[in-house]
Amino acid sequence: MSTISSHQGISDGYLSAALATVTNNRQLDIRSVSPIGTGQMAESYRVVFSEPITHNANSVVVKVPSQSQSSRAASKITRCYELETSFYSSLKSHVWVNAPECLHVWYDAVNDDFVLVLEDIVGSTQGDQIAGASYQQAVSAIDELVKLHAPLWGSKSLGDFTWLPTHSGRTDNGGGELLRSVFPTFAERFEGKISSELLLVGERLVANIEKYNAAFPKIATIAHRDFRLDNLLFTTRDGEIDVKVVDWQTVAALPGVSDLSYFIGASFNVDDRRKFEQDLVSRYSAGLSKNKVVLESNELWSQYRLFSAAGYIMAIVASVLVKQTDRGDLMFAAMANRHGQQMIDLESEKLYV
Image (tube, rainbow, N blue to C red; front, side, top):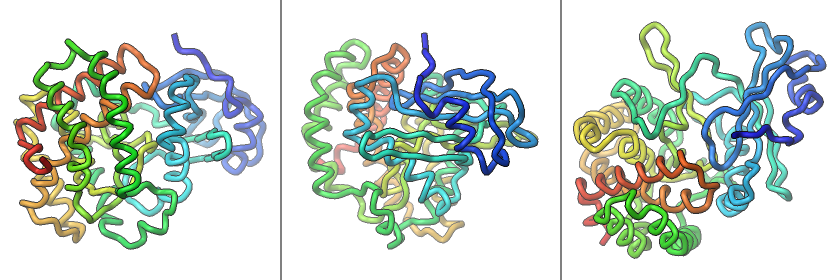
């Protein structure tokens, strides 16, 4: 059973000060706090106040560090808390993607501690990674990827965000060492939950990770790096699906197609992915073109094939580093199975081995 964090960010006093400009310095009284979402690196809570804080809202979402020591340790390795707070404080205004409005952000680098206070997307439905996406949800998500990627595609200003991870030899080598160190634990835990053929795909990927990294395209943009259904909030209005993108803990400067392949590969069972992927890749391409981003179709498809491995890598690393849950294991097994088959179908290994 989930427990409520005792973190300072979830208190009348802290939130009264944090939201003072929104509430005209009113003292807030918390009526209820309830866990939301399925985050494994941090914890999110819906905080409901006794009175509305604005004319149309009496609740916010407060995000604070995980109570799991393994997840806290993983954050220090991956800089998750620093990255998400930095996205909201300095990067969000530079992209067009729909993300929740940030009402307050605080980060303590010494203690790797943070508080995020975000608007509560009332009436939204969180995507379900295990169940998979509908075609309509996927279309809406792809349109959000274009809004994220197009504004800073190949921009020199990416270098202005000095905190933003990039694809470099130093960080890639460290990632390869981490991947090799955790793969045996991953393979043991998921034996029988991932087919033996696909575990071998993962084993070969880990063995050739430096070659995979070397095959990365040079042009980068802002990439979410964990753009999947569990991190999308869907709201239907007038027959149209709106999307809000959350959990910016892995944001980086990387080739945009890495997000595309990651999302499509993780969002469908194998048959549906085979059915929809050409159309969804074409929609992404068309969206980039409308925003004057030129990526030749053959090159886009080659990148899409290469980055089918991105989701498998995430499944290997995250499943071992963060706190273990039953749903988490189901999700990571689904990701590895889906992305492993995606790699086979698209012959992605031919691009780097």
